[in-house]
Length: 473
Image 1 (tube, rainbow, N blue to C red):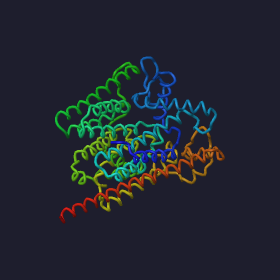
Image 2: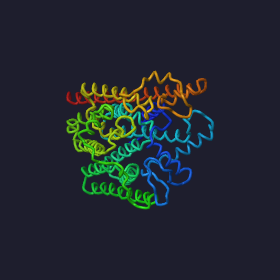
Image 3: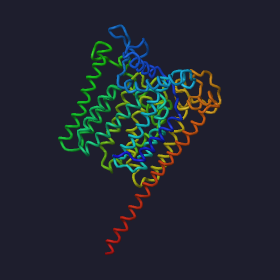
Image 4: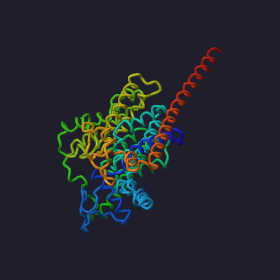
């Protein structure tokens, strides 16, 4: 599909909105570990670290991260961007005490925007109306936990991006077989498994979906692409482990126990007030509500795949001793799977959606914004749920305690902090410019949707008129 004005307007609107709510600092030890790996690669060309959380000793006595190499490699260019910021603004107080981390966190904004855009394209590929595709894309990024997690350096958002793109390439190959799609599938599987090893469950489900449609030859080719990607991932993963630990296989989750009672964890993961996926992202209910619509559109196989992926990970994380995600905002372990919960919504938001569908979507969208807003303006390391939310206005008017460190009780929007630090500088004007630009592209996006619906109605009226003329003859 060609890149259109609507694609551009959607990307720029999301980019502006997420930039306005940028934090510019880390909130957890998991993020710090990734940042340390990136620094080690960029500064020394090595993988070794000091002894810290989630590291293991290698045979050389050095400590190494147990995480995959895929995500740190994606961030390395942004580390060099941070070096550029440090060169240009060596003594500036605007970068939360660390120019490199400030720049590395920009990857989260870009991957979140990319996730929203690719989800929009996937909806269109499945036949969604443009207004429905845009609505679901905005709902995914703004009306769910994706928004607060755009401020973090976790591997989960980029995992969502890889899974969406894999499904998109799979559907494209089912309809228009090409060698390029097969190579893309294999490459995405290899990349995804070196970002997070547990993505093997999702890739297994997508691989099963890939063989459900098409002739036998194309099914075998798609299956081969998934298996080829798995083999490539195993080689990269094994070599990475051998370099770090002197062995091809390590148990990355050996410190976790998987015997937690599901009767306790699953309800909390699904609708609990602290970690519940539905509480923080009620648009996830589009999945169960869309069963009959998916059946009517002859996509019950894809609906079952979406349900299966959500179910697999809910049960996997529910059995884990870290099912709650530790220090995090809301449903950390499940939010990156929300594209599979919202995707079936395209069959509910068809050309003539029922009134109850529109009412539900608007209410769920609004609820998601309200519930996740504290996770955006408040420091996530201290306030992990909506129930613990501090007052927005209390933080807004609270003086900044430190220019180099964002404390637990500080306001967590970088632009506001910058204006507080430099109230008579250029920063307020730049902030206002981004607000106006974001509103402008939001308006352009709305006009794109309206023009598409008007053109469709004109086309329908013309077809009806021509049909009537033919019948009168």
